[in-house]
Length: 430
View 1 (cartoon, helix red, strand yellow):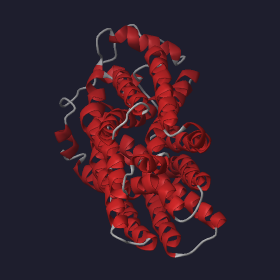
View 2 (cartoon, rainbow, N blue to C red; view 1 turned 30 degrees about the vertical axis):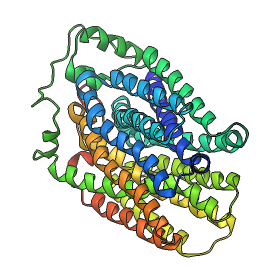
View 3 (tube, rainbow, N blue to C red; view 1 turned 60 degrees about the vertical axis):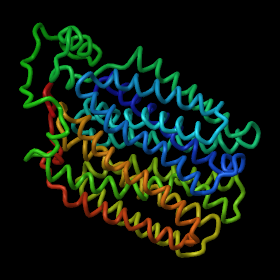
View 4 (cartoon, rainbow, N blue to C red; view 1 turned 90 degrees about the horizontal axis):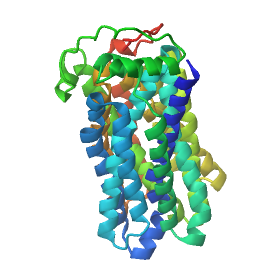
């Protein structure tokens, strides 16, 4: 891999890092928002779910456009939505405004995440593709960790609005970086051959330290415009159905944990600082698990690796919810939940990026994660509703550990031959 390819993987990592900031800011600030506006847990659950509803539509409506107009344009559009949504949350003064702005931010995040996975896959060499796609997903919890530290310092001194203003500024800076430095991948340019394709391909080849070409490579035959219906043709049908099931159930558990763990910790008697550090511990584990899952999957297979991660996640969640622990052990278990729940979940990014070819990759990942986010919408709202109805933490964690188990078996059943690691690289490699 050339330095430019490494740079592009790094840009994807930083963009995912920023999305971690954008998503987790509302989770870490939730206790103060509820206190200021007198919200119930059910109402706060709707705030979480409004952002997730936006992410779902972003996956369906925005991310698939990257297969038609290019990865770069969709990343720019998504970052504009995120920047506007986050900055205006810092000055909003009503519950209804907060709901709509979280929805707008979610649209941008939903559009950006599947495109990052596709971009990282296409700029990486086959040998390290799974690792790099997993590494990019590790940017998300790393951003969440930074958000936790900043929230622990900023919220008590300056209030919860400050964190949204800072997050919006960071997103705007990344918008400028993407506009001036990011490029569509070689795979995309060769397969789609947009206007001025030869010059674009040669410019990119030079950045990748490769010889330029005098004429365009033969344009690969594309069976049809990237359409969601292609996800159910003979090649993809089995993988699509099972991956959608895996995503739906893993999203239920993952987003419930990310949304409610700091609040649960605060309700158990821990101080705000310690409760935020619980969220940091969760995301520290997630960063490690996300980095490991792609690397281990390259050696032993993504299906088997994700399945083992999900089984471990199920066991650790049961332990956390049903046994009384000291603060130290609580933080360790939360760390392990992050390793296995989000690590297993993020193993689905390299899995989907291998299942679908370049001309339909963003569509496949976008629709898969859009279906999955329906579970993310349901999970936090259902958790808040059941908590208000009197279910104990033990009962809630036992209930919400089941979806990760189901998700693991869905992944294990995927039969796609594209999950086999391929060696070598050429301009039209899938």
